[in-house]
Image (tube, rainbow over all chains, first blue to last red; front, side):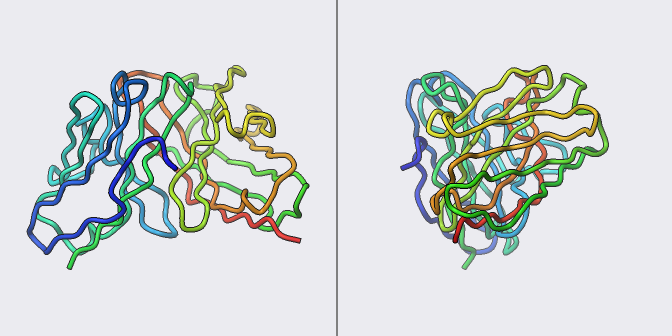
Length: 110
Length: 122
């Protein structure tokens, strides 16, 4: 089991807004920032969100992140077919003294 | 733009040592700005952090792998390496190298390699 909990799947139609949740505990999301990654099979994971809500240059503002307490979420608006991918949340965990990931959410664009 | 590229054997026998190298281009591994990291993804599973190292030698290892793991840096070759000892089929995965900026103003893995598949099988 992953330390951070994500729903295994999510879906939406083109143009819709979808959100993916990430639940943790005091030692990870409660004390540290969350980052989000987009991963297409066979490719390098791509950093989408860091420091809870910041976007690297080149990531469109359709992607947004938030965190409250021990939960975080990634929102994707104006859903496109090429958003179909696996999405992972991640954070530093003070108890493990290491990085933890969520189990990943497979996003399907219907 | 910095790039990372993994290399190493695609097949390792059980009980042997898995050895991978990550070559860094477009920047110096000894700049002091990054932690050099390994992450893996077993088939059908999610991402798992293996560990990371600062160029000066400080290491952070996943507690579940720590007893079998060594991450090292070769500044002369601008490379860092992973050694995982006494492997089993459970170590079969795509292995990624990545960089993690030291600054608290990022706190994420911002550049990743393409990944390399390693199968543990006799």
